[in-house]
Length: 335
Image (cartoon, rainbow, N blue to C red; front, side):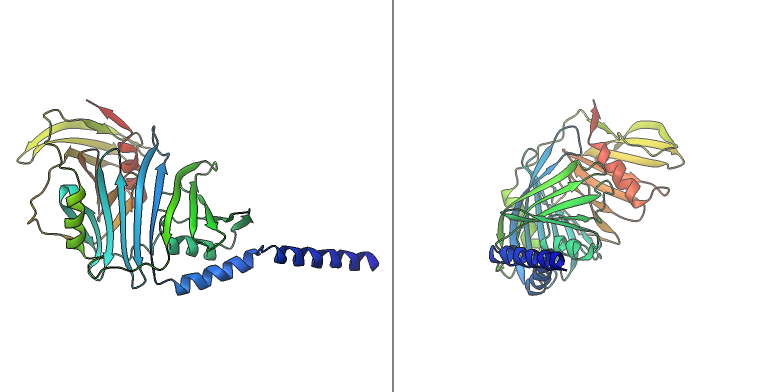
């Protein structure tokens, strides 16, 4: 009995020492995160995102604005390609804007609620709070949670979320594959928990016009078409007929793949559309392809990358399979 009492006293003493040093338990941090999520009215943040999903790492600047009424503005900018995209959510719907091409897509969508979003603070908190098998650790500067994920890319199995101890703002996120290797890394450089916004901050026209002023002018299409091929094809599917097709809009390259999971991949050089072009409404979702944001409709996936427009069509493929093929297209090129 004396030994048991002594162990209890040692445990109590250690608890008091940790409390005196400012250490918090996992339960304390979870409670604070729940309160933070409830009180969050809006924020602005900047981060650098690095992708390790291709032959060469790709780096993007990410800027996020969020207002509690459900308004979002996420700008993704690839410095090497000098081209940005904006994901916008307001009362009119969800938009994917590509200002350099003067192209906009509008969705009736519940984005970003359906999947994890590594650059959205409230999404990270939600992933922490809902994963009952999360792990927790801490060092002098950070609380670290490892949680399951719900990303559109199913190769992203786990994530490690680093929160600053002083205010619980995000410091770093590493998204891991099944072998625990980081495929996506985000490092946050700025975070304003008490951000204010102009009245037109989440307006589609204002964001398109403002972004176009800072975008470089798109170069004229070249006569030589660079041909991209997917490095991933589902089992039971093989390459079939490929041909160039000349249309009023220029030359397109059409690749047909046949088998159990047949699909058609069409690509052409980017064309800047007139400013008066109307915006179409889509029943679908914006799809995070890592290097760009795609537009998913019923049986098709559209995206732009490296001066090219791509259109992947199939009635045999699931949404995840189409996204996997799209992510692999930029890896290989022939001329």
